[in-house]
Every structure is written in structure tokens, then in C-alpha cells.
Length: 398
View 1: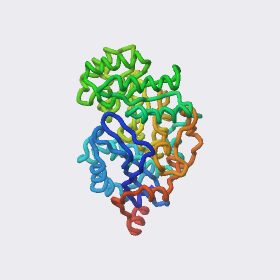
View 2: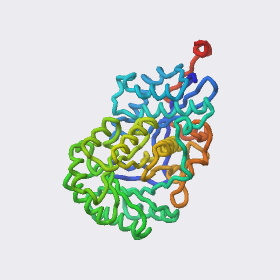
View 3: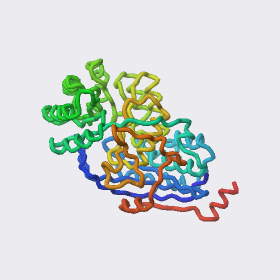
View 4: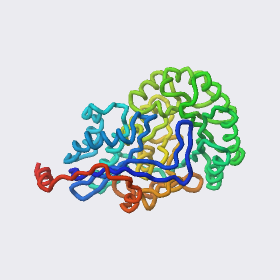
């Protein structure tokens, strides 16, 4: 496979409902889509949704790294196997020394597009190339946005109507009564059997986190995600010890790189890893994090970026299928949240939170990207380049 052309797109998609947590409120999503064209005519797609408070990256920084550094180097490259692709991305931050190792969104963007292109070029599903197999179904969680009771109730009513049985609730309000009311509303509406976990998005210090996690446990909440800021990493082992046996401690924003995972494993700083393909550097790197966690008795859940399209949703499904033993799945909201998706058949979970990933079996990621939908969500084309016919002929002759 020779990469003969590249196109980078900036996109904007409005939400059907605003989505809130302690650090951000969103009514639309700004994303970045990469097209990778090959000498066989195959086209692969990648996606990134940079968040400064997670990996330190911004929309602007990812565009700059892509256009000035990574994509000019990628154009004209040849990959003959999935192993060659894996080696190149293992060395990504050594090849591009100007990119900080914590900056994982740029790596994610390029890796997914190259893997998708390779699968389409070889006419093989990516799940097969990576040695995995999809289960009959995956069960997804409903995510309840923070906000006023009437806003929260819209989410609760929609998920209740679908029979969803697992929920993640955004917490971290200054007033505990607000968080308590949201959880109680959900429990009263959906019954005692549903699984509820919380996401505090870095809201508390050690003492307040200890108090709040105890209160959450009293309400039957099974785990809390990112209760303290990344700057309080050293306090996580103490928190885990204080709430041991009562409620799980899940890390998200504190878990971006392999070094992050090694520290939390070595210091017993978490009981659950929240894996998100966009912030963890792509499919292959996220799998490494998950396998490392499982080797040390840490559970894994598959998270998502708010506003991701079917590209990242599908990448997450591949990670889950290859990893196995995942306790929760998030994402697959598709057009339940977005006004429109990149695919005419978006990845949306259905009744009871179920989605059957094995219903998609095409090459690469297996999803059918609509060029019409892509044009509809474009805010601009940031960069595009193509090998000359002479250069392509020379590459093929080597």
C-alpha cells in the first residue's frame, strides 16, 4: 500500500441537546477528519477530537502538527503489512520529536486513517487483521449530562424509554444536593436494578473526594471516574485505600500514555481504567493500555469523546473486541446526539443499550463514510496533497 494523497478536514456538527459537565458545556462538536488515499484507489478515514484539558492538545495544535510535520512525511510512504504499520506508530513520537509524548490525538487521527486505508486496500476487515472477533452484541451505557433537573430529565426519559440498564452520571456540583438529586431522579425513574456510576471530571481534592465517594457509594453508585484533577495524581493511591471495597476509582484524564498506566499500576492508584481511543493514541496503543491493566488486575471500560462520529465509535468497538472482558461501553450515540453523522448508517446503540457490531463486516473499519455527509459538516479543508504520477510510478518501481 502506497499513500498517494491526503486530505485534512475541519468539521463542525451541532448537537440535538447541549451536553454539560464540570469543565465544559457543548452544543456542537468541532472535529478533525483525515482522508488517506492509496495507489489502489482505497480511501481510509481517521478522526480526532482534541481536548486541551485531557492531552494538552487543541484543535489548532493538531492541525499544525498534521500539516507541518506528520502528513508531509506520510505522503508517499509504503506499508506492506499490519506489523509494519504497528512498528511505525510505536515509534511515532521518536520519529516526530517535536510532538510531546502526551499529545495523543494527532497520533490517533493518523493511525486510524492508515489502518482503515490498509484494510480497504487489502480488502480485509480491520478486526480480522488485528486478530480479534466481534461478540454478538455490546451493551452501552446512557450518559446523563450535568445541569438543571428539567435538562437532566430529558436524558433520563429518553434512555428509560429504550430500557437502558447502565448509566454514567456527570457529578461534581458545588452543592452535593444537586448531584444527589440527579442520581435519585435516575434511580427512581429506572428502578433499583440499574447500574449507576459517576464521573466527576476532576472536581474535588482528596478530602472532599473521600467524602463524596462515600456518599455516592451510599446511593449505590458502583464507581467514580476522575474524582480528582490530574495535578493531584500523587493522592490517588490514598483515595483508593480510603474507599477500598465500597466504590471503584476510575481514571480518565490522568490516563493518556503508557507511562501514565505504568505509574497508576505501580502505585495502586486506580481500580478501573477508562480507555478512550482518541486520548490514548489510537487503536493499537489503547489495546496496549488495556492489556497492561488486565495483567495487573485493573478493570477496563471503553469511554468515548462527546460528539464523536462513527469513525471513533467503530475504532472503540475494535479495541473492545480485541481486548475482551470490558465492564462498560460508552459512545455509539450517533444521531441520538449529533444532528447528522459521517455515515448514512451511523453506529447507534438501540433498545436496552444493545448494539450488534458483527452486522458490519466490510473492509477496513467496516463503515461506509458518506462524502455528502462529510461535505455537510465541513467548516474548512485545512490541507491536502497528492503524489505526482511520476512519483507514484517511481514508488511502485522500488
